Every structure is written in structure tokens, then in C-alpha cells.
Amino acid sequence: MTRLSVNINKIATIRNARGANNPNLVQVAKDCERFGAQGITIHPRPDERHITNQDTLDLKPVVTTEYNIEGNPAPRFIELVKSVTPEQATLVPDADDAITSNAGWDTIKHKDFLTKVIKELKADGIRVSIFVDPDPKMVEGAAAVGADRVELYTEPYAANYSIDREKAIAPYITAAAKAKELGLGLNAGHDLDLENLAYFHQNIKGLDEVSIGHALVCDALYFGLENTIQMYLKQLS
Image (tube, rainbow, N blue to C red; front, side, top):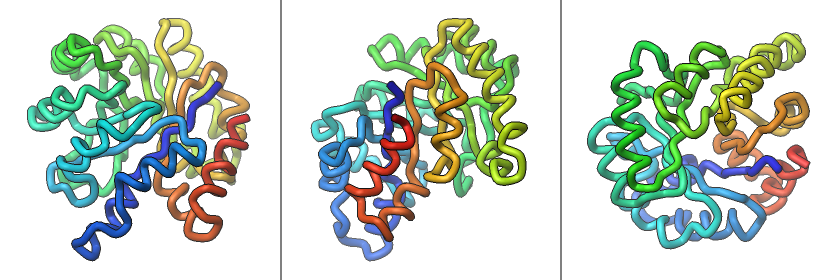
């Protein structure tokens, strides 16, 4: 079964636009789980422009499925994650000013750094996933540094899906096979939506989890949050 983890960053963005607590992020997380989500993902950034450090703490006792915190493993992020001890930490090589994630790790170039960080997080019982491009060498590098899972960066797939979906999915099939060969768990995320998710799921064998936020929240404006989560779950059935 492929789990759906709902990224609630955009909910925090809407809340922060008015400076109060509407929508209530904690309540939305509870409702996402009640509506069928099998995980909650957040991506706190240094400027706290959406998810704040306090949000990260507040969600810990609330999430009853799987809590996934993703971000660039700078010292402040590592300290925050270790204080919360989520089920999963996803390491993403974001620049501080990045609008959104736009590339995976070079797991070979950053081998020593990633090895140290992963060892520290796993010592606290946290499963570690590394955000990578669909490149078998980067997947091999993720295994070499001690990661438990890789999360395949799917923006290139999404961008090319309507042009040639068979060509778009091909490198992901190869990378996924390499992950399974090496005993790594397999996640995916970025720009997956109701149009391209089912095809991705059908072709990527052994997919453990997808993390979806922006598209899901946009769809919820039209369909409602409960209905939208059910629609995404249907794509994974």
C-alpha cells in the first residue's frame, strides 16, 4: 500500500497572510487524518514563512499517523527535529531563499556530511529519507550514507507528463528498481496531482509513500478538503 502524506505548508501560508490563527493548522492536521490521510508532512524553513518552529512542536502530540519533517539539515533544523523525534525526517538540499524544493542531493559529493547527519538522527530512532533526483548513482549514494529511504523528486516527471508520459516515467522506474535492489524504502513527491499520480503509482513498484501539498490544497479550494483527500487516495488504490 502506498501511503498519502499531506503536506500542510500551504495551510500555514494562508494563516500567516493574516497574522492570526485562521485556518488553524493543528485542526487541519487532525482533519486531514480524519479524512483519510496516512501521514502529515511539514517543511519548516529558516524564515518561518509558512510552518513555524512552534507549529512543528504543536503538531507532535496531534499527529497519530506518521509525522514527516522535511528540510535542509542545517544545525537549527537538526536541533528542531531531534527535539520532536518524528517518525521520519526527509533531508532536502534547499537554499534558505528557495521558493520550493528544486533538486535532489548529490549524495556522492556530500557523502561525509550526510553520513554524519543521518547517523545522528537515526540514533534518536528517526527514519531518514533523502530527497534525490531519479538517478541510480544518487540512489546508490543514499544507501552508502545510511539512509533508510529515498524520496524521488518528481517535478521533472510532472512537467513532462503531458508531453510524453512514458519517457517522463522511465528514469523513475530505473531509480525505483535500484532503490529496491539496495533495500531502500521508496517515497516520491513534488508536483504530483490528480492528473499524473495514478500513472506514476501504477508504474513505480514498491512505492511506500507520496507527499503532496500544493496541488492537493489547490484542489481542495474547489472540491473541499475531505473530498480531495479521498480523490487522491483513489489514485493510489
